[in-house]
Length: 537
Image (cartoon, rainbow, N blue to C red):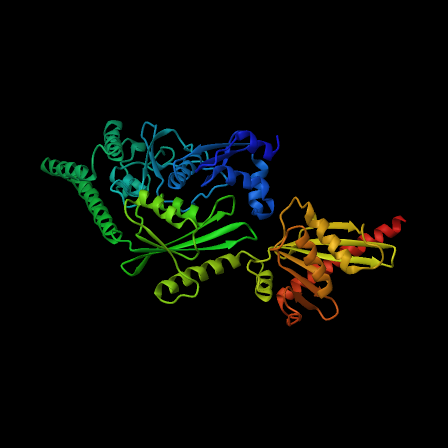
C-alpha cells in the first residue's frame, strides 16, 4: 500500500486532533497535532519539496497512522504533550534536560539500597528489581537528593556487601550491615520509614520529631554514641530544610523567562537556550536541542518544556513570531494555573530585554559554529549564507573535443569529500559544445530524482552564464531555496545570485579555498570519467 493509499483508506476527519505514526513493527515513531487532521497528515505525502530532510526519513518509515479527534486546538496541544511523555517516540522532541521526572527505587535485597531509577525509551525502568517512587520535582516537599536520603537513613551504597567496613561506616553514613554492626530488623526499620516518606504517608517533620525523641531516650539511658549519631543526622536534616526554604523563596516569583532558538538546517537540528530572570537577576540557564522533524517547532518545545518544570513564569520572551501563540498560551495556562504571556522580541528593538535575547542568540551561534570545520563557517560568512554549508555539491562539465561530453558532481560534507555521493553523467540531450545547456542538464538530472538529502550550497564550475543556466534548471524542478554560486577558473572569481559583479575575496581566505578544493575535485573526477570512456571506444 502506497502512502497516498494509506491516507485515503484511513478516511481521516477534517477536525482538530492528534495523529500517531507507526512503523512496520507497530511502534509509535511520531506524534503530532493538527487543526485539521486530514490536511496535516496528507501534507506529509504530497509536499515532499517543502519537507525537512529528516522528515523525509520519518515518512519513509510510516506504515500505519492512527488519530484521536479533540474538541479544539487546545485539547490537541495538551493531548499531544501527554502522549509524547507516555510513548516517547524517537522522532519527537525529548528534553534531555528535563528535571520533572526524577524517580527513586528501593531495591528488593535483604539490605536494600536507594537508587535513582533510570528508564529506557520504552518507559521501562532499568537496573535491579525493586519498588519505584515518583516522579518527584525539584522544589517539591518530597524532593530530596539521593545522597542526603542515604545519609539520613543510613542506607548502604555498595553494589555488593563487602567483607569489611568501608569509609561510609567510619564517617557515620552507614551502619555497616556487611560486618553485622546493625541487625536486619533495625536496618529495615529505617527503610520502612524512608518508604513511608517517599509514599507521602509520613513527613520529614514527623521523622525529625521522632528522631529528636529517640536522641533524648538514648541520652537518658547513657547510650551517648547513639545520641550523637541522632544529633548529627538532625543537623543534616535541618540544613536541608533551610536550603529548601531558601529555594522556595527564590523561586516564588519567577518573573520572566527568555527562550531563544536558532536552526541548524544543515544538520536538521534546532538549538534552544533559556535564561530565567527572578527579581531582575538571572537565576537559571539551560540549553536544549531537538531534531527538525514533522511538527517539531518552538511552539511544540515550549509546551513540552513548561509541562516539565515545577514553576511557569507569567512572561515568556521568544525571538520568533508564533502563529499559534494564543492557543499555545491557553494550553500552558491550563498547566500553570495562571495567565501566561508569550511575547516576541523584535530583532531591531532596544532595551534590556532585547539585550538579554541578543546574548542568548550570540551564545547559540557560537555553540552552533563550534561543531563545524572553521573553513566552512568562514565560507558561510563570506557568501552571506543563512545556514552553514555543511553539505556542498559542485558540478563540472568535461569536454575533450566534440565527440564526448560528460559531467560530474562531487559532494563535500563538513569540508571533506563524501565519495559515496559522487555522481557522473553522460550528456544526453545536447549536441556540440554548449556548456550552458550541458550544465542545466546535469543539475536537472542530479536533483530530479534525488533520494538523498539536498545540499546546503551548490557550486558551479564557471561564470555568470553557467550559474544562470543552473539556476534556471533548479527553478524548473521546483527548487528555489538552495544557494548557488559560480567559481570561474581564470581569476578565481565568485559569482553569486542577484549580483552582476563577482565578489572580491582574498586568495588566502579559507572559505575560498574550500570552493577551490571541491571545484578541482569535480574537475578531476569528470576528466577521469571522460578519459575512461575514450579508452573504451
